[in-house]
Image 1: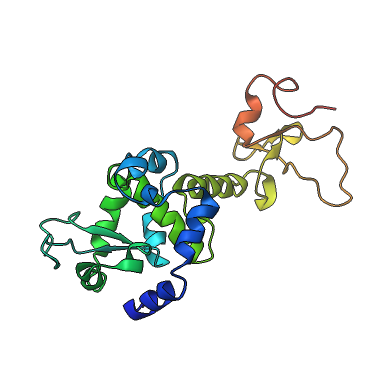
Image 2: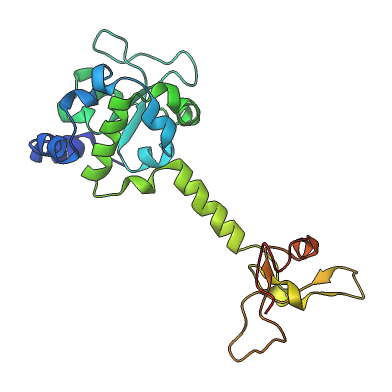
Length: 222
């Protein structure tokens, strides 16, 4: 559980780092606001965040909404929440200090889906500041990169070769199983000391070995 006092103390100790960070990134302080340089939503549209991961790392807080009078209000619906950043907590208004004590995890899916409308460029830069403050890298929180990594993992884990081997298959080794009628192929990667009649000609799955283009668009046959 992240304690509010720990957050405030951590930020207070490096208060000057805000200005140092502005200079290092070539950013003006206004680029952290919702007007001028910080207006618009093009940054989050280019690289949306994994909101839940940002919350889990204490970089943002999805909380009950402010009431506009310096306090915290009860939400009217599931997505009625405030997104408070670690940067905001460096000079937190009273309602923010109260709000972070009232998290709304049920609103995270809505924030995730609507972040291209909710996270303006200034807040996006605030989040980047928070990520660096935690000693982490932005790439760890970009949704597109995470999904791409998961797709690659799924791709490399695909069941392809016979004998339980995973990954691509060597189409030059494919034979029809007389019992099942299904095509079976050896894994693309050869075992140590293994020799084959032809250089591996690889594709993701046995079924794709029947597609045209062999030796021209994919793999090697010599």
